[in-house]
Structures are given as structure tokens and as C-alpha cells.
Amino acid sequence: MGYLRFFPVSHSLFRDPEFIALRQKHPDWMGYVWLDMLAWADRTGGTLKGDITEICLTLARDVPKMYPRRAAHQIEIALRYMEDVGWIHITSRAIEIVNYAKYHRTRNPISHRPERETVALLTNLTNLTNLKNKEETSSLVQTPKKAPLTRHQKIPLEGAWPSVKSLVEMYNKQTPDECVAVREISEARKEKIRKYLTQFPTVNFWEEVMGQIRASRFLRGLQNQNGHSAFTADLDWLLSKGKDGTENCVKVHDGRYHD
Image (cartoon, rainbow, N blue to C red):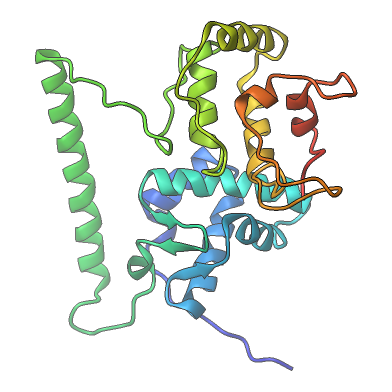
């Protein structure tokens, strides 16, 4: 019979703004996934070993009443959100919990007092409110220039979907680094993108396609299949049909190339 292991977390975890935001933006059970990540990190010093696909499948095994692959897809979306807001750092071999020390504190009679933690939390919230008010005031004076989107920035899709630009931005952001980024949008590409957006106009459809690419080692060019040389999916391939006459994006969406 094994011994039960416990790990320390912040007493105000369930009142923490980050924890609340995670459960509001994503499925409520994602809070338990975050606790699972902290328990895992307790054994490894704040770093979860493995690539993101392996880590998501491992965490998905403890999600009740949900198929592991479906849960893993939802978890990966949440992890990308955590990376965007700076909670974690994702590499090809591990996930580092940036704010691990915040949740994993040892008891210290001098520095670790609940009242100090509450004061720090209220101070942070006050600073965030003041910063927001300052930004709103400055926006009335001048309109800041928009920085160019990088591959891993959050895409502002509100009011822009569906469009050629919004789909290209989604592809560049949500596909893994192995997939070639789109840098030029020719007239031929525009025509194909408009045609496919007319047939498949919803954001959820394309987000599922990008998620399936991230979950497929074959589509990422990391393994051979059926004796063929390594293949890497790109946008032009998604917007074309296979030998069976079915659109490649539909086959990817349905999980045909899932590991």
C-alpha cells in the first residue's frame, strides 16, 4: 500500500484572480487540471516533462466522463491561453509553471502570513484597476499603433470573421512551429480561402482543425506513415481535396490523422 502525498498551495487559491479567470473562460473542471499540474510540478520542481501532446493526454486521463482525446484538446487550448497570459512557458520538451513559487509556499512565521497575502492581493487588484483607468484615459487622447501579430499572440477575431485575413492569422497562430507559416497571400490563395470559408464558415470548425494538427505527429512531419516519407501539413494542403475527393480540412477535423 502506497503513502499519500500532499503538496502545499496558496490558502487563497480559490479566490485567486487567475484561478477564477481560468474557470470562467474554460470548462469549470479546468481548475482541477490546474491543481493536477501543481501536484505534478511539486515532484519536479515546477517543470512538467514531455511535449505538450503527451502532457495533455496525461492530464486528460483524470478528467471524469469525457473521452481522453476530447479532454486533451480542451486542455491544450487552456494551456495555450495560460502561455498567452504568462502563467506557463511551453517548450518542445517541457512546460514550466512560471508562477509555481506563488502556489508552492513553505510556512514561514515571519514572511508567510494570511493577512500579508490578502494585502498583497488587494494591492495587485488596485494596481490593475489604476492601470486600466490610465489606459482608458490615454486612449481618449491618442490611438496607439497596433503591433504586428507574432505566431503565438492571441488573434483578435471579433468582428473580422470570416475573412481571408482572419483565417490566415488563425493558421499562423494555432498551428505548431513545424508547419510553414503563411507569409504571402496571393490571389489564388484568396480565392481558395473564400471558397472554403463559404463552405465552412464557423470559427469552431477551423479551431478544431488546428487542434487536430497539433495533436498529430504525422501532420507535424514528425513521423512517416504507410511507408511514405515525412509529410507536413500546410494551409494550401488544407484547402485542397485528397484522392478520395474529400476536402483535407474535413478529414483533419474528423480526426483521421490523430495519433
